[in-house]
Image (cartoon, rainbow, N blue to C red):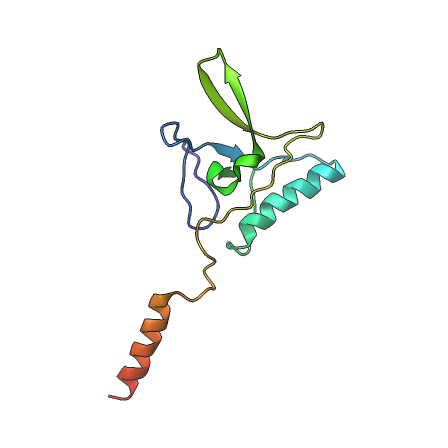
Length: 124
């Protein structure tokens, strides 16, 4: 099963050629207070643009929604570098913070043009 990013307007999947990685929303079924707090931050990030969305065990967010500082670079066999989100003793520290599209509530230039067009059509 191909996993797609759950952030609104993004459907990235894992693509090594483009350098896109996917990251499962952490701390599913983890009852520690700090783990719950971090999971809520990931879910709140998605809910900014997807109201009433709920995370599942398999929900993922792609690397496009993180800053370069959110990653550690790990070397395997000295040949290939693999990026991993920063961690501490609890687990993943990084929180997604980059939206690649603007929220759906914001009015686009096209929306403005269409409203003007509707007004013009009502006077005809």
